[in-house]
Image 1 (cartoon, rainbow, N blue to C red):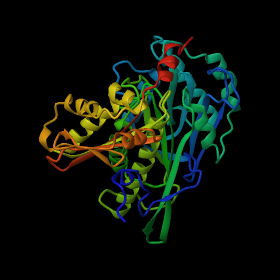
Image 2: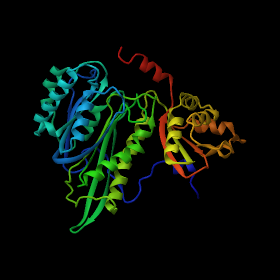
Image 3: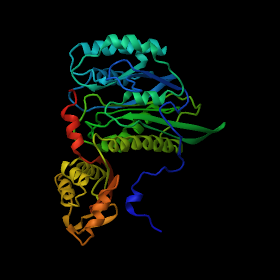
Image 4: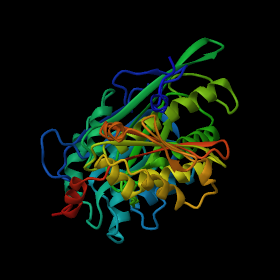
Length: 422
């Protein structure tokens, strides 16, 4: 029996990937992590806000950063370090404070945090990257960081604590790991890719108020590593929108330490294809979880645009649909107002032929040839009440496809963000 289209849209784990149960950023061999509560966030049960991720051996690294014109010094220093090349061993991260728009102290404090973390992890400061997330315009409370960084215990199973340490308004942890086999002269080797992320609000394409750390125990050609991460971010974090706002701090880092002992993965090989699929799987999973966990959200919106003139056109259209406040509020209210979907599509100005448009909500077709067709309104209302709402718009003018993710817009989002710092 043929599956409904909306079920086919749900990301499936594809061979040769295997999900790692309770997988996280320390699932790949040779990575450890730890975190403490230092007082950067308001107190609460099991809260953590300062953490370190470390590799037992030097890593090749790739990263993407916020496109905002105003950036945290934490982003500036990490971006400069990545662009400078070299190997890295650790990432230090704090939540509760963005270390942004605080003048020269932002750089001074970020450099001291790097030095403190390097000492605790037993690595050189130039081997440490730094990330921050939280409220903008407040200096880092360095006294608290100095007092607590020494209490961070770096352990093999510390990935979940690190995932807890990076969240701010998130309501759940976001973690994932998958593995696959590569063949070599000495036989088969298991490669693992793991990751964690945070993000719930101020989320929009070109990265967002998000941090994502991914690791792998594979040995990977550095050029391939950078290309794989860039491609994965394009189909994951850059296709998420919660509220159309973009952060000053967002960072995605991928570290590869080669602890699996494989021959370096080169572009064009079967291993490269499997590695790319693994990184993409982890990134897409984390991106969908960010959309699902949007501030005040009750529903995940999964919007697929098919048959566009190009993949880029399809991405622009899908992003527009999940970003539209009118689409988001209609889905929250279970209002089958499909005109809002077409409005969000049309305002992108991508080339299309209205007479060829088709629109589906959870596999219920409501538009054919650009016009409404008879449908049972109550069935659509019921579909819009599901925790995951799948929208499909078929343009039928080309072969470009893309999927973007968002969430509904609720009263809770407005209330929460109207008193964020008070």
